[in-house]
Image (tube, rainbow, N blue to C red):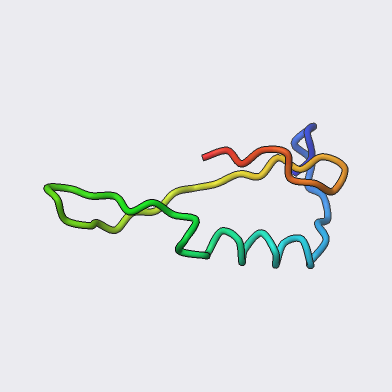
Length: 58
């Protein structure tokens, strides 16, 4: 979506790059509960201006 909350086309190469970056385990910090690693998920939004990611919003 654009800044006016209208649907917009995204470059497929950029989408693939964002997915690859996000999926890398080295970019995630383990969450521990009672000193044991746990599973979790997070919704992320990317703010993109002029074709560049300017902010990642959890």
